[in-house]
Length: 114
Length: 114
Image (tube, one colour):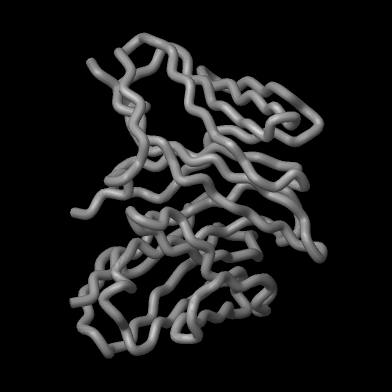
């Protein structure tokens, strides 16, 4: 079937190594950021989020770093496993007219080499 | 708790026909958003509904429409289908509109227009 990852930048990582996926966002008013993981045949799944009053947040094997000065977001995955192979999207959120608006990045395909 | 459910999973239609896709959000979630995903354009926002009212709309032609029912279930309709409408259509729910919270996606409906 058609793959969502067909025209995406690809990051290839050896199993056990750390992965870093980067994302540049565009709206300086964005105050909430989320990383999603999309496996083949499935919808995007929430991984981790961070609010603009923080610059780092850690989860299980994942860390998100936020640099508001240069509008950059990164996702670090420790000890990458084959199950981490997927497309990763960042999303920036901001409030407008009392409602949350969101824009997704283009995505990065992570390939884990066993 | 059951996740977001989208039906059908796959659909094949011919040009000129119309199609209706269905989405059941997570129980208690009142906001439902729809996205179109293609390899070339990524995740494109279609519209968002909250309490049966359309709150946001993306840059899609009027052939794309939607609605939300009192139980928060949502449908989207595409009339006069074109080949370019072939895509994965994703529905996402969240607790409330206007609050920073992650989207919870279904696994999508894969629409193929021939």
